[in-house]
Image 1 (tube, rainbow over the protein chains, first blue to last red):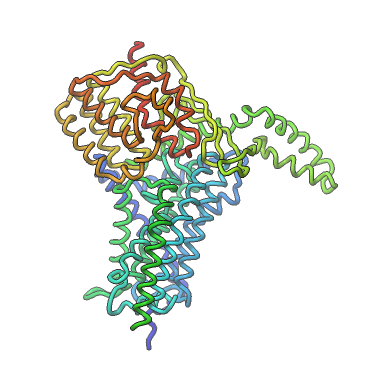
Image 2 (cartoon, one colour):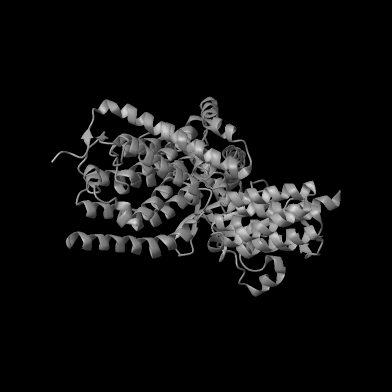
Amino acid sequence: MSDPVVEVDPSWAIVGALLLAVLVMIAVALDGMLAARAQGGSAAASLRWPAAETARLLRQRRRSTVAADSLLWRIGGAGMLVAALLKITVVPFGEWTLFDFEAGLVWFNAMDALVWALVWLVGWGGNSVHALVGGYRFLALAVAYELPLMFALIATAIASESLNVGDIVAAQSELWFIVWMPVAFLIYSIGVVAFSVWGPFGSSLGADIAGGVAAELSGVDRLVFFAGRYGVLVAGAAFAVPLFLGGGSGAVLPAWAWSLLKTVVVLAAFVWVRRKVPLIRPEKFMEVGWMLLIPAGMLQDLLIALVMVNR
Amino acid sequence: MDHTGTDHSQMDHTGTDHSQMDHTGTDHSQMDHTGTDHSQMDHTGTDHSGTDHSGMDHSGMDMAPAGIPLAGGAADRDGLEMDTLAVQLGPVLPYWPPGLVLHCALNGDVITRARARGLDDAWHGFVEPGGREAAARRCDDAAALLALAGASGLAADARRLRGALLRGDTAAAQHGLDRLERRVRRSLLRWSLGRLGVVEDPALAQHLVAAQAGSVFDRLLAMLGAARDANDGSSGERRDASRLIADLPQLVTGLDLAAARLVVASLGLSSLAAERGGHHE
């Protein structure tokens, strides 16, 4: 049996990183366009905005706070981008992958658990009340989204009898997982939006606490943190493709094009949801996570396990 | 653009943030002590490094790193000890009534004690219900509350309506207010704000006028209703800012910062202060 994915030379990681950067730019531009449409601004200006903001932050002098825990602060700020890059190593792009790891699924999950620490460290490091409160909020939120997310990931592993992402794609040759495990897909999507501190789960970056964990970030620190935050959103969207959407399978177009296309569609949906759902405070989401999503995720897993056993 | 807007407010904040840090030091007299201690410790630290004093040195350093005293401890709601920070909210924050200052003691992000004051005369006395401009101010209040609740689309609508009202486009504004109210009723805000900020203390509830009864969600709808009433000339309620400020500590104590910000925004204090300011001129 031929391997569903081929591991490519590590030097291709540069291309992977560039691809991530391009997708981040697309997400930022799309978000800007939606904002412009909602508030009656100029769409052209919002397309220029990512580049202009990057230039502004690169020129801006880096500020620090009194008694900042600089080391942990920087680790947290830069870590988001690192976590995003590490995540995409196990995401197949068509039939190529950077890292054909036996436990690719666990690898991805480990990276998103890393985000807990990273966001908290950004909140902690600046030695500022508002940033710290943002950190608290993220941890509370994480307690509510992480377990359901794990159950959603497990669903794909049960159905493909493997933790290898290539095997998970291969198991979908007849039927995409999104079709027979829609609940897992929904929970996975909620998890991605939440660990990206995005939209309804953005209370850790809330306007009521002066930008929360990012309150004291400036200059290049701010740029890297927000790039990383978009990065984990992109990585989450990209990982949904092999997990639930059949990877690179599709008619006419080559596999890599399908991977890219599906990623952009999922990413666009994530970006769009930001303006559609109001902020969900962690204590409210705690109810949803524990009372609804965890039981739903477990039932989904049970159902899939029963199907697999009786096949 | 939305993004740049947020950015700026964040920058503004940093200034306030620092002053809050300073406050922590000055507010607590015992903290001051540790501050002084620290400087002495510093000296001993350089004198005998590596002696048995180093243990003490260390604890001295920890009490006030860089001259900022560490947070003191106090029992949290669950009885366990938790850091307490003295934090001042206001007088200037985004989506915050201008000139309102709330001195809080925070356990984590929960307000355990609060003291409120208005900075100037604008905060005393009654405000009579008014016309078109009053309606626009109520839209401002609603926009601030919606923005805090993270409903950026609805907040943008409220800001547009404010513009329409100030331009004198009353018919369009009336229609827009109806539409906004319908959209708010249908939104998830009913779920996220519906049980927040309900006043249970009967004595306190008596102070609040009809527009401030119920939850934060009810008050949001009341704001939009008041804007509509003011716009079409029907009289609304007389509101009293000083009384609300006196009640504020009770309203926010026990809430976390996010909930407290929403409750404060739901009281419509910004329009009160603005109108009082207008009357003085």
